[in-house]
Length: 351
Image (cartoon, rainbow, N blue to C red; front, top):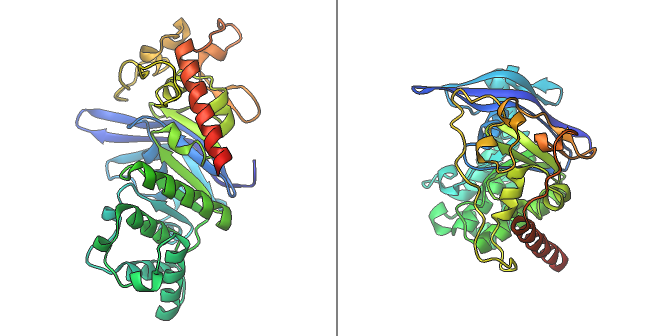
């Protein structure tokens, strides 16, 4: 992997609620290389957004970081003061949120919003900030940037507003860009355009990107590496091709099989049985065991470690233990995953 820009080590985060302590993130570790795109994938509530809000220092008041380190430029972000974090947040690590309308001020012209983000992190004049704002609008694909600089958010479509939010995030040339499900509120066409835009910007600026999503299909042509999360843990991690072409965890099998594709031979869309756990006093063993048709007795007794599959690929399932029986994903899952991978290959060839 390229030079590491960000290292998350054994991060554990919980939330105090009336129902009890919710263990949202449980001892996760990963690294982000320079110029790399890492996708964090999983169902809602698996800990993706909490992980990234921990990096940004934007956790809710009832959250508690119980352990771990977040290392950036030789510093543990969890130990920095609020003032020190304000210099990093937006300046060196920026975040794109799901809904652009909650990120933009409807009473302020978009050019001014971008220019303010520039001046907040750069010692430049108002004129220079305006020039930079126009440049950023052009970079993210807004036509007639000089004219549209003076317009309000309501004058833009949803996809254009998301482009503006991306421009604000890029205002200070951050080293790390965190995209928290930035295409959720957009239609399929706009989703593809925003994904291509993020991919293009990442290549041009050598920015490292963490992409959060619940949909494996969204990141198929964007991510260099994929980390699949479930119940607050990373249960599979590897290069994008490894996770898509050689998945080893039954949960990843289910995610791939549930991808809709016209090329699939069967008409019934696969669904992972059951629901995720609440994470209030989790039961011992593998949290996915109650939903796992291939669960072993060991899954109910102890959490599996991340078993190495290759130097870059690992999965937390007892099926990879040398003593476990050999299990292949059922044919319907394999066929659907194969059809989905073919679709990805055809799209890549067309680009």
